[in-house]
Length: 65
Image 1 (tube, rainbow, N blue to C red):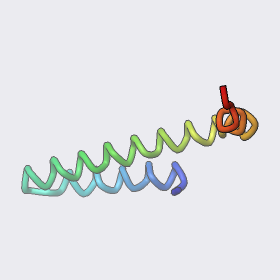
Image 2 (cartoon, one colour):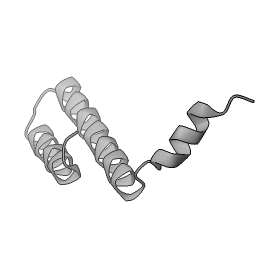
Image 3 (tube, rainbow, N blue to C red):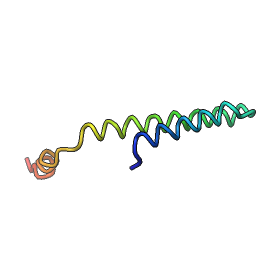
Image 4 (cartoon, rainbow, N blue to C red):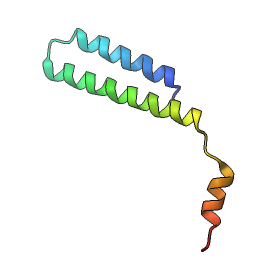
């Protein structure tokens, strides 16, 4: 997955592009895309801060009861 800083940078580029767009529907779409990039960046930062615990995952998969 992409680096969270790259995702944030792309969101900023989309917002800058939207500011110069005359068509309201295109501007709105660009802003929604930027919001999605921000959300992806936040998810990526959370994943980096909370890596999966391999032992816990293994325990979940091997629980037979």
